Image (cartoon, rainbow, N blue to C red; front, side, top):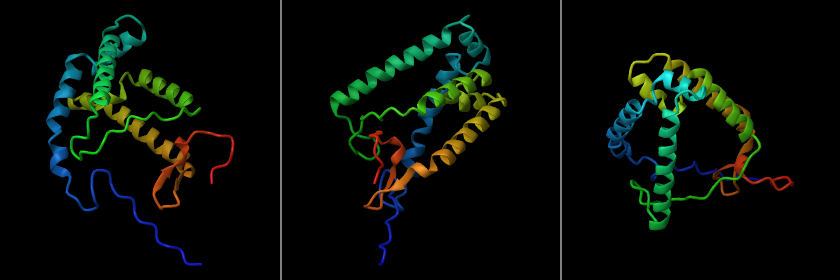
Length: 179
């Protein structure tokens, strides 16, 4: 029986070989501005994280709450307006992912790492940009955790009958074996 070669997956954003560097570089000023705002809000200050986790200074709590509220309003507006992706024009997909029991220990591990490092993974690059070299340890933890996740979940990633990559780990558990 002769097997047909699987087509290689197409990268997001366009056909293979398409130059996408310039549009991505256009977002660098937005990233720099966001890092500046994080810095000014105190989200890159180790002492503010200690105060947050000890419930002594809730400044970061309010920064996080304001960010979550802004994000919720923004996503709601994107859904209502039927917005499309800025660079590709593709419709945005807002479907949620199913609950997986592994999210519980993963969340606890994230919180433990956040508390021990005194740094949110989302602000660590801004910390590094400020010259806080301790951020390198947090970046190392992020990379190690990402690698371990890939190693642990590698058997769950398969290929569909059409030859497209498919993450079987995000499929809902139905109590029966997947084909």
